[in-house]
Image (cartoon, rainbow, N blue to C red; front, side, top):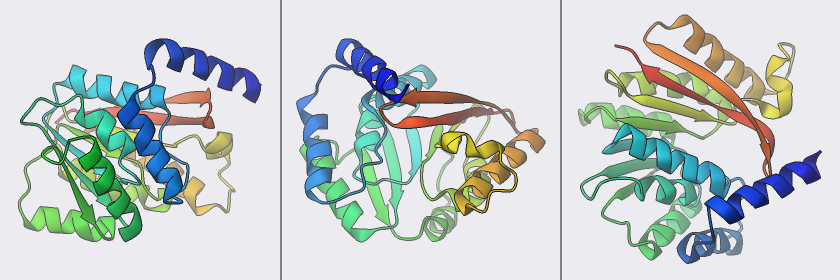
Length: 221
């Protein structure tokens, strides 16, 4: 089935997400810099961009930058005065991301902060950062519960919260899993299910990135 998934993914990408020289160069730069090839797919990147546009978002928080491929997709959906703050643990990844952002001509819209995301989120709170319109969580899964708490802290009525990689090849249903990533995602689900502040669902996905999925929710209060 994986071959079929990839063929369908390529079909969708060719028709609806045609090759873009800047984005293609971003992925090439990531490969040259030996970054892990775990970026969102082109169709997933465009979905993020469409969600930004549908929401009319002006302020975005991204937890997990890698090489800024998803950041650039989202930034292209922002108005001219929009801004993304994106957090990246690895200095090398952040350096590559800044180069990619410059290449895309989006330095005025995307700010990369480097360091431990939980510490950076606490710094944003100390700075009394305004709430965000959309928050994309795509970092280390064991910390997903803490990231969700911070996402809710930086939310207001109507904020959209998206969590990536929440199916884990179906392992999310295995309550006995010893994988801390799976357990982090399971706790993430439990917190969402028990919190009346957020209304959410999750979608399973298949394609060039394998079998996974994403959560999308909206803050109710």
